[in-house]
Image (tube, rainbow, N blue to C red; front, side, top):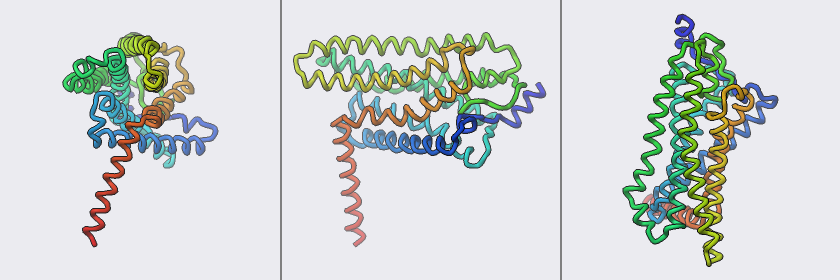
Length: 320
């Protein structure tokens, strides 16, 4: 217990990918560029969808939530990582580690559930277009936006509190980019095998039904698309669904390797690469995948820019 209190007071040391890298300067620059891209693109996409009334439809409201989650997820980890590298300090307090774990679990879990709801939205839009406004009416849409946050919050509270209650008597060094359950459990001096199995079970329960729902939705969508008579409609539907599936593949691939793969197969190098992938690379790519070839989003972006230009011109005229 004395060693546990020592850890509680002194905290941990994050030995992440920048510390173990052979070219930390280059990697730090790359992560900084990706973080700036993620911050800018997700922030702009969230702002455009929020400000443009034409995009206040279920598909784009759900997309705005994805942008918000990605924006927050990458900001929970990357700024501290970069500042720590520049200062040459990698310490994180016990409370800070618990908070970071809680936020990452909440945001990551909510994103997985949200992707399932986004798949259902596309299924309804393509397979049941005449009933879309009924099946995706505002009340249901708001429920689909709130449910991922609520369930992920509850899941995160349980796992964070239980993980951080263990006594830690091993080294204070967490060989990972951030505070997550698998690397934290390696520092515990109590038997964590049962809890590791529970993490595996809960991770499977949290991820697998959502992934099954996504695959089922897009299977029905693909069948419906192949029967479309309009070539333009088929192309638009295939592009929308392929972009969604790209995001799904990136997210679920990393999440399953991290939380569903048995702990004996984990290695610090592999976990660090996975964490960089879903903490900064995926959030940077998501807005580009969803918006670059989306005429509605680009049109809304131009309208918002035009609105800001008009406001700026009005201020200039008033100042004169």
